[in-house]
Image 1 (cartoon, rainbow, N blue to C red):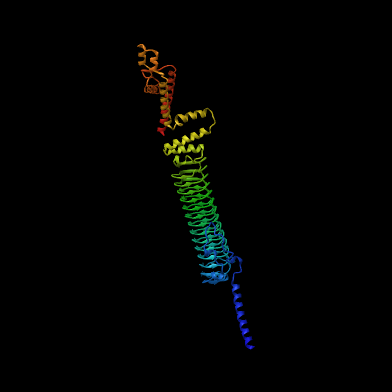
Image 2 (cartoon, rainbow, N blue to C red):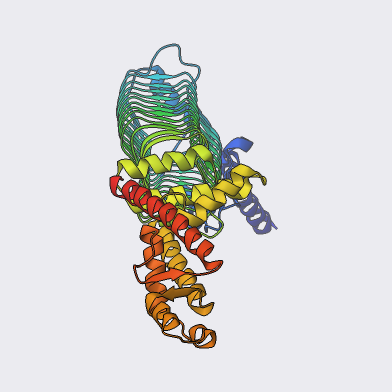
Length: 549
């Protein structure tokens, strides 16, 4: 009996030890809902992209997430900051919210948490860091609030992952700032943030809407190969130096309205899968959109280009709106393709270069009230797509004449007059226009006048020959020699003589010395002489006009 009681006691003690150990593990789990990994887990990869397994399953199990990491309580980090110690952690697992908002003075020492996991929220709102901050490779499971934070040293968030909404609103970065290859899986707000030196988001992915409204980049800014899977808002953003969006992908709606770039703007090979607006954007130097792909509407209305602008090989899958846009230099659309309408109404452009541009059958080019000094586009390439506008057509005529592209100028003017004539109601002016059209192609078709000259000679010659309306002096000799009237009537001049007579009447209004018309054919001969003087005079005028051009 004593042995049985002893075994029962031992078993009870072992069970008690197991329960205590289990209870201790339970208390180590984060209690904050915002800090739990499951609440920070993304379920929507967006735009058909598959979310990486290590991202979608991040922090789903605390014990697996903390494997091989040093477990740190947030209070330890706060304590170091308060005591002025340097924060230096690598491969740390921070179990809970990291909140530094209660500090009464700036953080004077370095703050480095590298390749670590914060299984909670990161709250640095209003905190000032005098030295460098390095959170590269760190995953933040909860919401991140860095609004109004001030970073006076270099800052790195390279390869970091923010699983919940993140705010850098009104943040100030005085040194070099890196977000390279980072991932924002919740909404990201950089509104009114200021970067004094280089800032790089190269290779970063924004899974949810990203706001950069009134962003200020005083140094170079790189958004190369960035992926915006939803809304990207750069309204009123200002870039004082070079900004590059090379090969960036914008899957949702994109807004650059009223933004300003003082340095070179590089949008080379960018992709816009949703509507994009650059309305009111101001580019103070050169800007390149070469090989950009605009799948839907591209709006550049009211945009201002002070330097050279390059849209060569760009594709516009929807309407391209450049209405009221201004350019003091060349806007280049060489080898660009337009699948929707191309709107240039009321634009003010020095040189518009459209060499070898391609247009779909439904593309319409509108230049209503546009003031374009030079248009480098062959008339045959745009004639079927240009929407009719009096000022636009006449402006193109002047443009082609200034470029000494005579055929383009004449063809453009001819189509302009044809369009005006077709729209004009029947009147005396329309009748005169029709005569001008048929006789000389509105003064630009010498071939029309030549045709009527030849046609007049042939038709009068054939009529005189067929109707036997001519006589020559040889027939008169036959009459005096006693030939009867039937013999005289059966004798007619040859067709060659008739045509010779017609040429003489058309060019000199005088019959050859051995030939004269008879009967009412005398009136036809006189009419041919009048038409000859008119058509020959018209031929000289039209030919002179074409040669002068």
